[in-house]
Amino acid sequence: MPKVGMEPIRRQQLIAATMAAIDEVGLSEVTIVRIARHAGVSSGIISHYFGGKDGLLEATMRQILTDLSQAVARRRRALKEQGARAQIGAIIEGNFDRSQISGPAAKTWLAFWASSMHRPALARLQTINDRRLYANLCYQFCKKMPREQAKNAARDLAALIDGLWLRGALAPEGLDADAARDLALAHLDRLLTA
Amino acid sequence: MPKVGMEPIRRQQLIAATMAAIDEVGLSEVTIVRIARHAGVSSGIISHYFGGKDGLLEATMRQILTDLSQAVARRRRALKEQGARAQIGAIIEGNFDRSQISGPAAKTWLAFWASSMHRPALARLQTINDRRLYANLCYQFCKKMPREQAKNAARDLAALIDGLWLRGALAPEGLDADAARDLALAHLDRLLTA
DNA sequence: TTTTGTTTATTGAACGTTCAATCAATAAAA
DNA sequence: TTTTATTGATTGAACGTTCAATAAACAAAA
Image 1 (cartoon, rainbow over the protein chains, first blue to last red):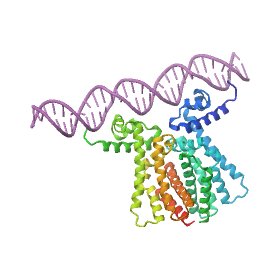
Image 2 (image 1 turned 180 degrees about the horizontal axis):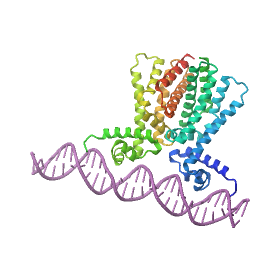
Image 3 (image 1 turned 180 degrees about the vertical axis):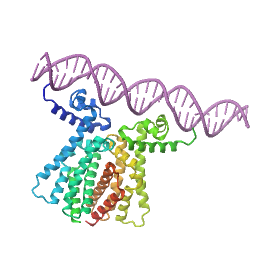
Image 4 (image 1 turned 120 degrees about the vertical axis):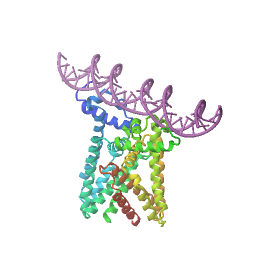
């Protein structure tokens, strides 16, 4: 079995297995044996590549946040128009991108959200991501309204996105991404015409 | 030490200690020894009154949900006007009631939120509470708009409330209840005038 | 009023289980 | 032969639960 250059392959494999395991039994019940079994490898390999369970969990959260950033960035790059409405629309669509709404990713995210309240390493990642979303929204809204009003609009929309997301993760039937996106876009229009 | 009639006192004491402990180290790091130490009693007493750790956790979540229901019910009962706008306003204010936004309650709630994805007993409580909020909002919005539009408005507002709440629980500086309430109320007005 | 017996409240050490981490052993590849 | 990749049994710590022991409060009997 041993070949060279396995490191990047195993890392991706184990991160995916971590999401699957969290989706299956929840973050608090996840063990390294379970994750290893999901990936079809032995448990020892986790410490070898990630230094331990915590390292793997942090890498998994980092992956999820990176996926989200890229989903948003991709949509914004693909835009022809540069207006505020179009930019914010792309941010919304990116947040409900396919890679973000698959069962494993959704539940993993919510689990990390809760866990980040008490793990400084995860909280740091969480905060960085949060601030970027807020700053982007704020910048775009400022084009259309006074600064204070724009701040409120950004807070408002960020909360709605997170709320739709949260309720989708908790609902037994999962998140209806299309419906959620439509609600957020309608809300955006209301904010811009007010 | 032993006096009669300690049961209700100890139950409340232990539930409060559970919230404090979760606020301190997070749900996943909470041990019965830690909770017992918070309450100033021995660890054995938890199994005596709650049948075990899980029983105590479920009782704690039930307490939080009950507190919320009562905060909402109290505000609605105090209303003079019965209009949809006033009723929904009371629901919003109840959701940002003092008892709900104290540090321990906020973090405990988010922790249970995540945990309910994989614990049927907690998921049941969560679902009941959720459905009641949605049904109430839906009923009130229906007075002011067509049924399908009302459903969307209810989903919208419920998501915004949860989102504001979630971001408040995660923010290092905690939830600014007044600001959150104002955002939700402004959003309500936008929904009603659209 | 004292004595005796019963119930309620509580403790904390002991037990069995579970888990993350470690590491000696092994095998393919270079 | 050396390096890289991997295994899985083992270890030690941590946890929830159990339970025998204890003590206060109460009730009935003497």
